[in-house]
Length: 326
Image (cartoon, rainbow, N blue to C red; front, side, top):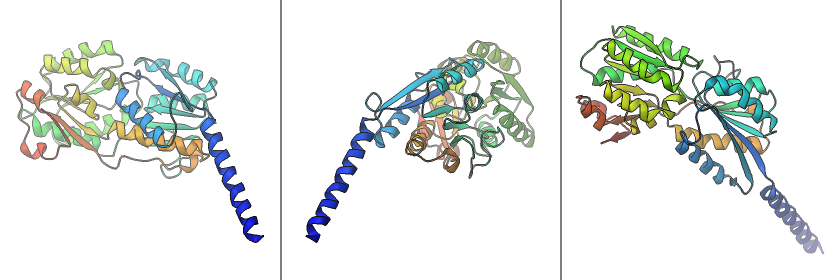
């Protein structure tokens, strides 16, 4: 009798588990994706995000709906798409970069937000601390403390002639303030004159490159911004036209023809963002999920671009590279 009762209890428990699993599989989850650049410009990272979600059982079109919103590199339009996404009653919002996350933060204090590519989450006022975010925002920070100085150092190791160092920023991106401070300090420590050039839209690129060329700059450090990824082909073309060595925070720019990049792997960060989304969909509060910083930074070098610019990459630098493009 006791065995029969135990069997019936186990059978009932198994039936409940199967029912719950079936319910979860049948449910349609809805999340939002917000960025300033189009999904096409960020295709590989987005696919990594989807792959990460699939590992947790979320399949777009089956039990997952992703609402995509972007502004085609126009940061001023972020408030509108943030409000649109909040109005859709999504369960989680994936926000790429500081300006996007700030726009979503202004639009909602209740819908969970997973941020990716944030230079200074605490300084930007997005979270209370990395360990205890508080509020409705968590996710992945983008830049380590010494990234800007490393970019300057790499450029000086590859470019033999020392002259003015150019910094290129999107002035509409609040994270550029931190990068400017660190880049200026690195240039000053090396005794290099520094000039800042602002680019806020694709149409600003060609005039900016012309001004940098007139300065006879030894090279340009591009402060991390999604605009450089969406415009990476155009930037590579202009850099070759003006024979300007360029360094970036993302390897996507090097794959398109930029000279060097040093920074976190964007696709890996988007894949990890899927873990945050999963935990939130399963009931974990964003306030209880510590913000993650990049565990490793990758060095990518385009040797073909170096040759086209008449540069030789020192063997000591090549040996440190995680990705070399011939």
